[in-house]
Image (cartoon, rainbow, N blue to C red):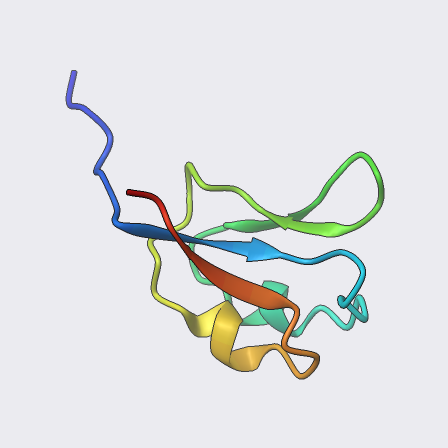
Length: 69
């Protein structure tokens, strides 16, 4: 079994800024965007490949890049 790839950063969606327009979900090719239990969009870090398509697509600037190290 291979270890998951380690990334230097991740993306996070701020639910207070998110307009729920689904632009991020439509741009994601890796099933990395989902609607969580609080009915807000969120990023599944297991599926996210850090391509930044969601980050660039967000019209509300609700997605932030966060360093993990």
